[in-house]
Length: 550
Length: 88
Image (cartoon, rainbow over all chains, first blue to last red; front, top):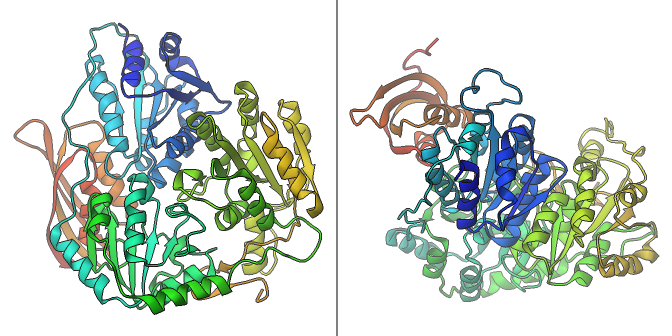
């Protein structure tokens, strides 16, 4: 059996059913072997989209996403997607072809040191220098990608190794992948803090979904009845309508969420990392709060904020150990009252389309069997604020890296992971151009993905910052010369229509959702529409600007 | 700012030393001195890494111990700044 044939067999053994990729010279032996495999290969139109689709597939399915590309430019095009997965701790295996070992280091055609290039953005990486290493490398790559704090792993496969004929055997190991149980002393310390607290808040992050600890987290909330705020990646850890859910925290967080955190005397950080978009000015973040930090990664404890009790290890066990009743009736009532009094008003003046209301309506119409994949910018924040997310795997957003162009490939990955879901890509007129070519992938595979392109003829978030923080000195944000997106979509076989007036919104959403195949709604909004509230650069989360104040 | 030394045992695998240096630089620790010796077992390197930083030693220890090829890492001393000269 050739190395390439064995690689495909080993991938099957690891449970891989879909690979997102793009062929080329050095990876050709693997593409040849794929013909005889039950693994489905999805041909995207740019390698970046392969990596981002694998990321979306992983987030939607909970499995390891797999992408593949050839050497040189194929490999370098994967890098943004690999970095995206790294920043958001997404389990992924990226396979790259490489020039034959005797040509490595000679500047051969399409040779690039992808191993070296990706070192800072992978959890681990391998060059398969010998056919005898192949079985172990594939097995290790999957184990490393999904264990502990997940992340991307690169396998760089030289062409001669892929063509080597040998007796390959599937590698088995007895490595225990289970995260360790929390230390009893740490749990006891945390319980003491919980019992002493009068104003606790749960600060929930993406680690909960990644750990598969949704049930335990919800049990923890039910037992303690402590108010919950979420990071961008933590959205959905409890249903959006839950009475104790105060909303997203941080730069574009809900007022109730940010106020609760700032006023708290105890923050229970669960699977989050005190990211600057969440904390605002760090030394003014939750200034009177002690911190309990539950995480699987010891490197996150105390990285940015002093921690009073670090409960490290398996989140499921940690959450179970801390599920106890606490007496905080007055505080809980205050939080809920603030949430109600600061609830969003969707009745904005004017006749133009109001993006928050559009997205709320879309969310309600699409229902719980929907998955929304965003790009990056204003529309991403509006989705986070107004789309009702009931589980983390329903909301795919590039949190750490902030990758424009993420949404459409991620939606493709999600649709392959969940064929029966209504998958929606919410994009902007800036972001959509970053991976526009993937509309052709929707048509090729007849993926019924609904693209909502919110168009303000500008790089909206940059324009908003230039308006608010750069004295309206607009620099390179005008996109009014964009092509006619409906014609572009139709030329790629995706039915498209334009939505220009508020009165057309309900019918447009209905048309979009009921379209049997892919569709694109080109939604025009005012160029100067901004995301509110916003915490300005260097400001504390107590200093939220809103529309009136601007 | 303080200067401290880490002792690291890492497998002799492709890129294992690069990963340590990459994490050190990326996490904003300034390299002062580094020595590498092949361990007696023939499978590992013993690395002694002296760095200078405003960030605590323990943060770098935790980042390095996450590397797959690293089997042991410990901060062995920590001294106030102005100790030692930068390697040219």
